Amino acid sequence: MLKKGYQQLVDEAYAQIKTYSVAEALTKLDKGDVQFIDVRDIRELEREGVIAGAFHAPRGMIEFWVDPDSPYFRPVFGENKEFILFCAAGWRSALTTKTLMDMGLENVAHIEGGFTAWKAAGAPTVAKEIKKVV
Image 1 (spheres, helix red, strand yellow):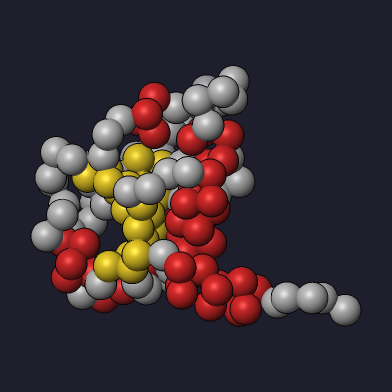
Image 2 (image 1 turned 45 degrees about the vertical axis):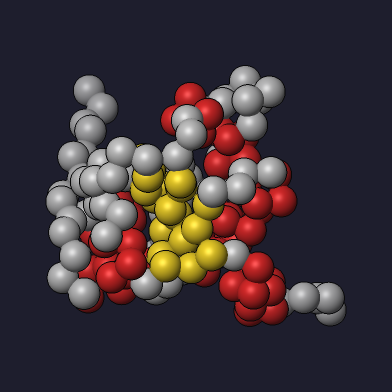
């Protein structure tokens, strides 16, 4: 028997994190002090498209990519920016936002409804370039 199910974890995260609507997130697009972070799986990006300029940080690696002491650290996370995370529906990005806050990242939020809501609102997307392995 689980002590907490996924929905309870997501609800607890929602209660502690900053959430932007798609309209609010759109006002931050292309701002120099904001970095959108896509936590979806690469197959989702290739299938559904991406937000231009968003940095792809898969959910399974982000804790390692954010930590400057990790051998997997990505310099984008050392920049003095607001990080706005998103996934497909907003569940993974909510959990990830909460995790990053627990790690000490303060200027972090996520998009309500994720990429699905972004697309439904007619917000701009581009196709993900598919890299072919030769």
